[in-house]
Image (tube, rainbow, N blue to C red; front, side, top):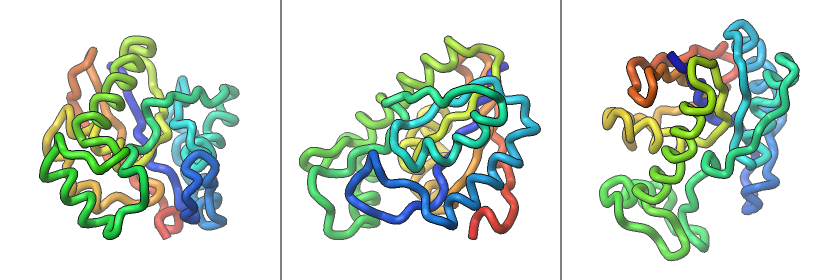
Length: 189
């Protein structure tokens, strides 16, 4: 069995710089708490979206196990649109209700999901029977999970916290179990 710990990044202060946006003070505290929780999971590898907030969220566990964070472009957040959308929640609703639809310069659910799942499948093959942390983002995380189980949808995405962790257990490429890793209350605040 291969265990993938999907980690939605901790809180960050919004800027338009997707790659460079780091964690807020609240997010840094949450990342330390996350490290404390994951340090007992016998993690073998740490992978992450190249976005700074995702890397910073999982860097502590990488340091703990003496490994570097391997960047995987496929785990970066979906591109919503070329320019900021007028209403974020309405835009997300549109994308989930019409999976092939995309805003100008953005990725449809289908395109973003295919990108994420392609990267996840590579991880499942390269790290079979290992425990792997994947630092990522809410939308792309749920799209990947949705590929294997349609119950992970827009409603599920809306309930995620920052950070949030789901342990996905696979046999080859078959998802057989999903467990929510409970974080300490102060992590989610």
